[in-house]
Image (tube, rainbow, N blue to C red; front, top):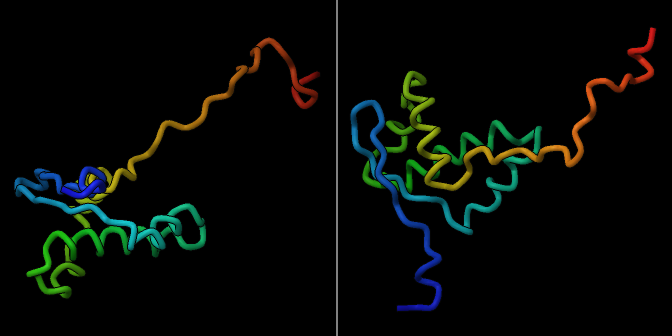
Length: 111
């Protein structure tokens, strides 16, 4: 067993619209699209690539045309599973370290 074996992405099984699907995660080779998810101008295209690459990796025997024609009625469940397998789920947003006191007025609130 190689020293890096434990760091390899592992497939996960998900129940999507009553169908069990084993999804395989993206790898370091896909870092380009992962980084693009953080760019407002590239986010939509990057998300499309995350979905497409994950499905092609998970179902290499399926024709690409069929993968591209998956209906939007399955989008929410499918994207949720793809984000989970790739550890791209929404992370908890940073909270302010010192909440504003609601009794304090800002200059725009003074009368």
